[in-house]
Image (cartoon, rainbow, N blue to C red; front, side):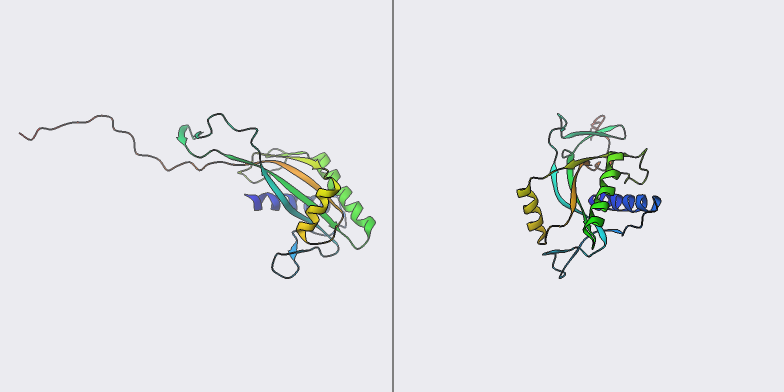
Length: 188
């Protein structure tokens, strides 16, 4: 489900830029510099999308987390997991002002589309009900930690918190009906 959400945002941004007739580079996922995933290589003239964190959302837990209902029947299963994703959009253009322009386009796109659901975004993965975008401003110290973790130098970027990806428990296979009556036959 995580990969389908990242693909959804990548494809939507790319389609939006093409629809606007903008000559912007492709929206891509980053590659590692040496194939070991130790550091990330942001090639010039591209907009990159990567997930830098995810967190569990505990505030909206159901009171009875182990009881679920699906298709008109109740079943016991582990509680659902609700996740918030932190997506970093990195504009790596050869000219600094071009990077700023590209980030402005990303910000405007999500300003106009703060909520994605199946009515306004038919390409949203079917297992996702709704996604809400929230711009996040990190203090300088935390920004430094993010870029150190990526093991690369700072690039112009913007961070969004995506609320809320819900991992539903799988419905167990149908159970045989319970015993209705017991008949005892005598062997006499």
